[in-house]
Length: 237
Image 1 (cartoon, rainbow, N blue to C red):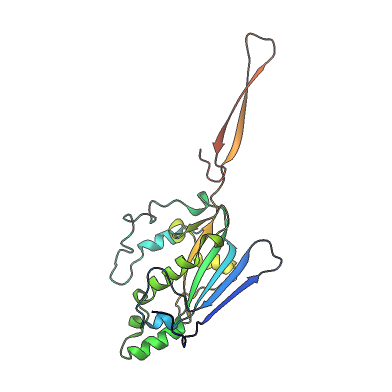
Image 2: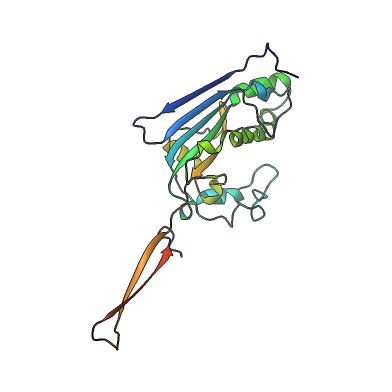
């Protein structure tokens, strides 16, 4: 079946360079976004909600207390997140972010108009509580898929990789986003966001150790040397 000629695409793409331009940029996309995977029902109100995308540069804020939050109790989970010690990429087996990556990162953000979503949701379900209307199961997968499809290889700088579990590695995402001038709502009413970090792994530095040892067959000292890869960030070989 061909496209509906009466259906007008609602898309807007803007590329904004932050002066002085040094290679860091803000890329914003808004409008209806169709996904290759993780599609929602064709009648879902999510098709009526704008998603904005941002790629911002920032210096991360590492705060290892973020890891402990995974053990904080929440609804139906009195001992915290069930993924703790069970899922790859989750504590307590994760490495500290700054022992693996450089502190300067890109923040890739997908932002959904949550205020509009809640209004439309309430019209469909007028008897629902606020907690039921905000249930992340109804929109979280959609937003995650949006960011995954948006982050094509051409948007990732050479040498950088996607980090999806920055908080599990001790990064305070609220403070890190604030460093980029982007405010995350702690109790969202207007916007909800899903984000990944684009980070560059630390480069091991080559250190040369030189030792001077006497050589008994000659009358002058003989210098012995060797080199090894030593990571100056975390002090490991």
